[in-house]
Image (cartoon, rainbow over all chains, first blue to last red; front, side):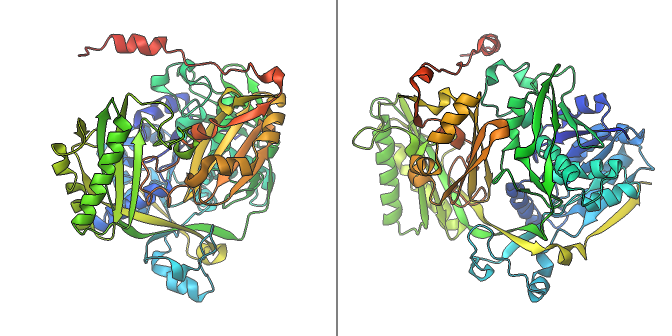
Length: 463
Length: 131
């Protein structure tokens, strides 16, 4: 293929399936659906705890229902990490969706091997310490046992699946950008040590992995002037064999493609931009040259890469307690002071009730809930000017769900026995909420060779 | 020298990885980029965020897109699924950063980024049956 067209049809679990229609109508070669964030794995873990057949992104069938006609006629292939922590279940759901539409004969590949949870002891015996990636703390200091342990796999198993004739590839925790590199490397025959080409593919993947966020979503420029802000399109990349890429959008749609919209995404969730460490290559994002072209297109050239590291990133999650929260709105005058007094009264009542709270978090919305210490203050520490209204949000963490719920109940008597005119439940949906499970995140590394030995790709034809 | 908030000079975007937040700011021209490279140091950003960012702040330059990227450790109250903060992913930290006031040459003192024009929003909202 001279030029391969890939599209970013999903940026998170819960994104908008209708957005892929315009991409499919453009005739893309590969529709990539990126469904996983750190938070998503935690959500899927809670799903799987309740029901062993869950643990994948359950909006996958809704996406496939739109894409399958294009898959069946051979125009488009679909690659997704919607398998989450249960890719086998995702593949079953995908096959059922196809059969329900009367579509048979297509091939679905499933990539396994990212889930390390049941192998941790063996991996430790093989010398894997799983020290915390940011703090260096040993795994023995992790406060609770891991609930999931997902390695971020790269593009190669997906490329293998495509080589075997897969029309749809479903994976677990494959790194977001690698979903997009895989079809580019496969179609262009890029060698797995052609670092500049691989880096170009990873950069394209990074620009596409968050759907609308490269075409005006979360854009800090003149966001109000974007065409059709109620219907931002999702991105398309046309990539040549030499790695030259053109980022574009469906012709009829709103949004904008410019160097400015793209550079916002280029550094999103990035640390050292000269060393963007993907499983497949270390990409230097500062080497890329961006050129604005007419008609909402940007050409990207000159991307450089260096050899991949010998490790995969791994994410553990562990139980970290139970949270609850309340929100109460107060009006002028003295809205902030009423909010502050109510927080103190709540805390005092909780103390009197003998409830153990391990951590409190108090926010004054309309004053400094989001800006914190960056917001200018008066000399006494209060708001620099009197706010017309203020919403108090109090959140807490307890060791057990029952206590987390009881803490919120201490707010109830304050409805008629507190500083004046507090509206409980403002923005919170009915007052107190307790019993949300918190999960701690433990990023770490694992030797690639130990993981690769267990990676496998299965292929099944839908009959 | 004059002072100006970064909002008049830069675009911004924030992201999260675990308990690390990053905020990138983007200059529109080389002159502005030179100013923010000089003024917006990791130390200033660390001080600006105060108790919100408990760990160290690292700064990276991406001159090809006239950007500075600040990587802020121990910055999200434990990370997305663990934090008690409403902004659990630190999405709003970009706005919080461009509140910072910096020294600029007098010639740049009048810089002002355009403000939202929401005629289209007014039109939509005017059509709603509202009480």
